Amino acid sequence: MRRKSKDIDPLKELLKEQGTFSPSEGFSLRLKNAVLISYRFSYSKRYRKQERFGKWIIGILATCSLLIFVDLKPSASVLEVVFPVLSLAIGLFILILMFDKNSAFKS
Amino acid sequence: MLFKKDRNTEDHYLDKAIRGERAGLEYLVDAYEEMAYTIAIRIVSNSEDAEEVVQDSFLKAFKYLDQFKRASKFSTWLYRIIYTTALTKIGARKLITLEIDDDNDYIEYVSSNDGGLERLADADRKRFLSMAMQRLKQEDQLIISLHYIADKSIAEITEILDMKSSAIKMRLLRSREKLERELKRLLNNEIYEL
Image (cartoon, rainbow over all chains, first blue to last red; front, side, top):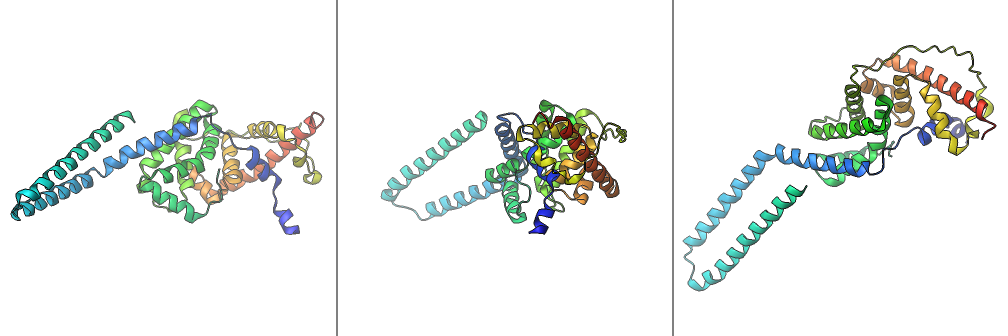
């Protein structure tokens, strides 16, 4: 107990309590936004090559799947289901892409 | 503000920040923003410039976060960036370290056993401390802040300020003595107002 009270440094306590300064109101939020925007930008810039490589791989895989599908010679009834599903998927992809670009411009 | 953080927690959030996750970046900003601002304002001496220095330093730190080798703590690395950015802001290579006459005749040293610090009223503590700190040289204010507020060791302060450890030790000792003397002098003069 005695050792504990001896270890307490009043100057240190005072400095910790009153020795810091706080920035203006709203600065913290501004700082976080600035950090997030700049980091997101530099992060995507840093991994641009890997991102492109990934897109190429996805493209090749999708083409291969389509070729296999054509090679299987699907019947007309199967195509009636596949084409609407495929066009829905492509439409959704374009919409997501458009939203993504819009949000990037806003931030 | 966080000081004695669990290293594992910090590493966990640091990893998240490196991966670009919002939680990691926000944790690091929350944890070090106030101390970063305190260091900056001690050098540039005005709030607008200090905020600018803090923002620039955080942006720099996060830009090169993936190159941070963890040889030192993240806070030590960040405070070093803040120190150099603030010096650039004021256009100095190092802080001016002119010797101030320590033999102030008016300072009456009061015994350390009089419990003087405890008697400071809460409302006036900050004012007294600020007045006493202003009596120190800028670099000494920084050393005191880093050691007693940010819990930085002599070795870490050496790394941040790029000074010899013997110089840091000597300055820390002298600054502490002077700060105590100043606080006690102010206390004696103002005790009746409290």
